[in-house]
Length: 64
Image (cartoon, rainbow, N blue to C red):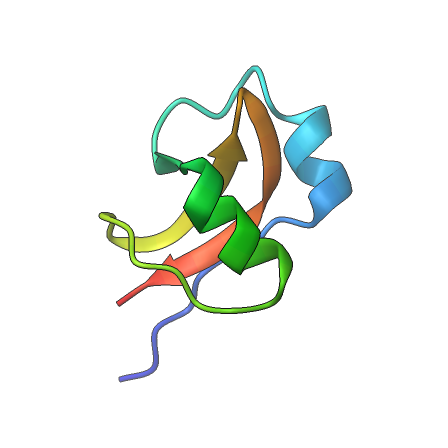
């Protein structure tokens, strides 16, 4: 069966930031450098997650 995940836009992350309490991955400086260049990063999580760097949401990703 096909998996259906909701992936929030960058703007939606900021609107809903106070309501997002689970599925958050905080990333390091090195991970941020890779992420911002469009590369995959290694992180612990399940399914679609919100990615946070230094307290700010910067996007969504899918952990596999």
